[in-house]
Length: 190
Image (tube, rainbow, N blue to C red; front, side):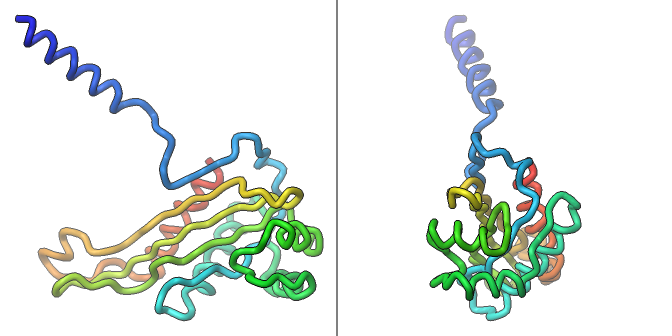
């Protein structure tokens, strides 16, 4: 009798612990940051770790458009950002130093700067199956202090069970890019 009771109690405890909310491992958000104060952002050129040479520009364009579509933020045009990067002399636009981020934000009048990295973009293969995949991470740097206040990552697409069993090619690259960007923006506005 006691073995059954102990087993049932352990099962209940395990279920309760499994239901506890844990901090997501794919996102960081500074609890002290007033994200409502951010109205104007600059998206810097993204780091591209893929073989697809135009992946960073494609993702940056989709991300900027999606941010503008929210109606919550003004995204400084890429040309203005490029001029600001040249004026400040940022050595690595994909990963500016704290001082460079503060100077750049002052020059282009941004409340925050967004940087990012494209880790995977394009077709992946496994055996006879192939599908498109995108993996990216984005960061938000506060303009006055140059402090990293938010970061998130996501991966979309890839080879699923149905692709392995029945072939197929997964979803179109544009479709999974939009899904990945929508997820990143959802994490930004959480």
